[in-house]
Length: 249
Image (cartoon, rainbow, N blue to C red; front, top):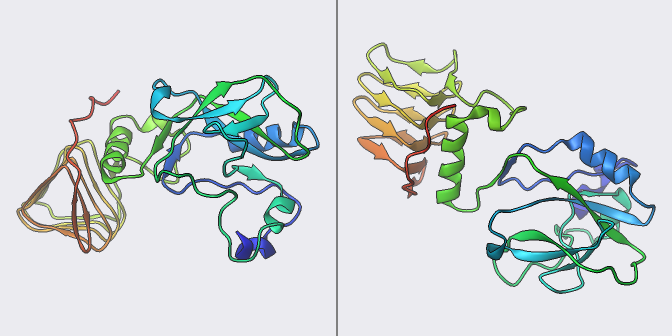
C-alpha cells in the first residue's frame, strides 16, 4: 500500500481480497463508512457464518466497533480505510496488521461488551449476500462450479459467467454440454467434448478428441485427454476433485 499512496486522494480506499468472490454492495459500504463516528479509521465488511467454530472470533461491541481479533485487542486488515491511514504505513509495507499465526485464519462475528473506546476505531458493516473464498484449489474449483450452477449469486459480475462467448473458437464437430463458460479467445478443437461443469478461459485450449468435465482450463493451458475435477494451468494440472455441483436453478 505504501507504494500506491500517490494514487489516493481524499476519498475512502476500498480494499478487496483478490481470492474472494462476493456480492458486496460497495456503495453501501462507503456510505456506512461515511456515516460512522469521526474517530473511525476503517470499516470492515463482515458476515455471519453457519460454522463459527471453524473461524477465529472477532469481538464487536453493540455499536459495531471492533474490539479484538482472535481474543487479542488488535485489528484486522480493513476493507475501507481513509487515505490518512494508508499514508501512515511505511513505504513498501503491504499490510494493515501483523499476519495471523496461522496461514488460513477465518473470522466470524461475536458480540462482546464494550470497553473504553480507542482513539482510532475500526467498525463493521454486515454482509448477508454471496461470499466464497478461493484460498486453495478445492475451494477455487468449487467456486467456479457454484457460479456455473447459479450465476445469479453474483448479480453484478465483471462479465458473463455462463455460456459460449461469440469470440470463442469452437470446431463444428466439438460438443458443448451446458453448463459451461467458454471465454473470448478459448479454443475447442475437433471432436472435443467440453462440459458439463467446465470453464475454459480466454487463451485456453481443449485439444482434438479431449473431454473436459468439472474443470477449469486457464489461459495458456492445453487440455489433452480426459480432464475431470482439475484446474489446468500452463505449467500443469492442479488436482482438486470435488463432488458434483447442484443442478442449475
